[in-house]
Image (cartoon, rainbow, N blue to C red):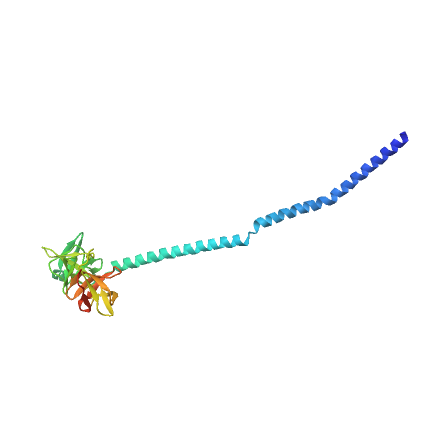
Length: 254
């Protein structure tokens, strides 16, 4: 009995030893594959995080492109507006410089407007500049004893004005004061119909004034002023100008 137990104990010990050796061999052979699998999974996760979805990438590129285009358009618009302001400013401040000896100043009448002194002669205004005298437009608020040659009497909104070279003069007791262009009145004085296929609408009552637009037959124009042979009218698109009276036909009121 004792001998049999010893043999069983011996075989049990051997079996356990063999099992432990087999388990060690199994673990030694499978450990690298597990490590490799872990590293592979990590690389796949990192690759998935690095490589974006094509739609996401395309969307982001589209958004970036739109922002770039919008930024360029904004910059271009600002440059264009700034350029127009500079050009408009240069056009306004650019005057024609004339050479006028000092002894000719006695032929000109000096007019004080604000802190500037102007000289008027034969319908033109001059102002002293750094290199001579500048021919300038009539300053608003200047009082003149006589009107320039070629002035035309006009009526706008029931008020009488004199107009020369696009400048309006308002008669007063002391003379004629240079004023801004009168605003079109709210109510019309009448209506006229265009009698020609195309009628030029000018900036002033005269053929020397530039054409601003055209009226076509049979448009109806609201009369807001008049001058000899001319009507100051408002077009259907609310633009104003002067048309020749002989190419129109007055419409009965009411």
